[in-house]
Image (cartoon, rainbow, N blue to C red):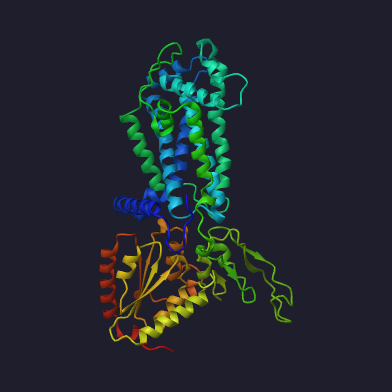
Length: 526
């Protein structure tokens, strides 16, 4: 997998997948709304599905008998009220966890969240996926029907292709009497122990997030649970015949979400099949190294001018990735003027954790923190340049259009700007300093329209939500900015929203024209 070249950007395959995800995001947002779009919550939904599977599994294990595995499961299957649909919910929630985990992996890959500070999350995610599949396989073997027999025999052949055992594992499946309670106890132990290990992996997976969201919004939780429950009652999966080591197994309906690998056994030898699956998993784990961008294409990490830090803690509180710490100020003579030693802690950026989201740029009242070229002071200079352009415009109202690079395509961003609509692109809407917006409104601009990702779909987790809270004065330093809400229009945008945004722009222009003259900004550049 080639590295991304800064001159060409992502390769064609990545762009195609990204376009497909964007199209799906748009469709699901129309149905569920951007806040409850399940594609924006694939990771938390996968954890929720796992929790449902664990709860139903704890109930089912009380009825499981090691000496009569198939008979105990068949008895549960025959109970329509307290058995069949609960087993079905256990099965469907497990399948849902695999689907959502796969979607989550694809989404993180396309969005570039796989290297640098996010490498740990990617590697732990690969281990979680392997553990999830192993848990599923042990569960199917525990049923000991035709599908369970196929999995056990095929898995033994795969293990025998490795030079690990002195005696072939497959010999254990030659005679029925060799398969006893101890075999099913091992599978039951793994089926119960692995989810506990996955809890530790989930902690590792989210350890670098300041406020990890382990579960989706409550509405999405209950809707997904209700939908799976209805499916479990209406169409519970069947149960194949009992495993028969002396005959040809009848697998019935094979669950391809977990047992897709059985299809390769018909055309590939066990040795090559093992090499294929191990190779694919190793390639997945190597993605952070194989697909990282060239150094010239990487955005620099944030930095802080500690000489002017006032120790307000806002950047420390806002950072979504635990990359900012408060430390004692440098000693006198090290970045300090004589006699001006600070009596409070100052911010410090741990660059190995910084993803260059720029959210801290908008957290700082003195504007002394952020990625190079994107701090609040840099924004101030860009705003001054826009205000100078606005002073020469004859057409009113003059509007500054601030566009998040992740919200719209380049063509859509270009279509929203023009001679009387001064465009300004930012890497993330969360880096927009509210004082910058206030400056634009006070020096030559009639209004500011911001097109940002929906809060649930922000690639930097909390950037869009922080922007809204700052512009409304509910989050510092927005309380000091005094932004006129009538002259600011914040639009949640996704690729394909250009017609709606054009209509919103027209309505915003009409609103600005109708404002009373005292509230209009002074024209000209200071």
